[in-house]
Image: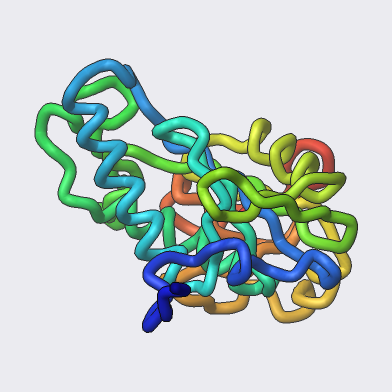
Length: 219
C-alpha cells in the first residue's frame, strides 16, 4: 500500500523552482587549501552545513553537490539568490574554525588596518549567479532536480572567474531593476549587487566597486 507522507524532510523534485518561469541559478565553490587533510575535510563539512542553513533561510534549492566543495543551487526569486550569497560570505567569515585550519595558507585571519575588523578568516566561497528564462529541469537519481541550458552554463562560467570571498552576477533585467536602489540592505548585511555600483566583496571587508570580468556585477 502507498505510504502517506506526513512531512517533506528535504526538498525533492516537486519542490524545485519552476523552469517555465525565470530561475536564478547559483554555482558555489568553497576554498579548500588541501582537500585530503582531515582538518580541511572537517572544515568543508562545517562550511557545507553553514551553506545549507543559509540556503534554507533564503528559500533556495540545492540541486547537487558534485564535489565536497562545489554546489549547484537554484532560486525562484532573484533577490533571494543575491541575499543568499552575501549571507553565506558573512557566515563563513564568522565560523568557529579550528586553529589548525587558520594556520593554513589562505586561511589566516586578516584585519582591516583602519577599523580592526576581521575581513578574512578560514574557508571562503566564490559564487556565480545568472537569472532568466531558458533552463530545462531534469530529475537526478537523488530525487532532486538539476537545471540545464544557457542560464546554468552562464552561472558556472561566471563563478569560474570570481575570486574567493566574492560574488559575480551576470547582468540581467533584474540587475537593471535594482540598480537605482543600490546599495540596498539585504539579509545577512548584504549590500545589493549591481554591475558598476557599490556591492559586497568580503576580501575588501567593505563595500567595493562593482564590475568584474565580462561585465558581471560584483557583490
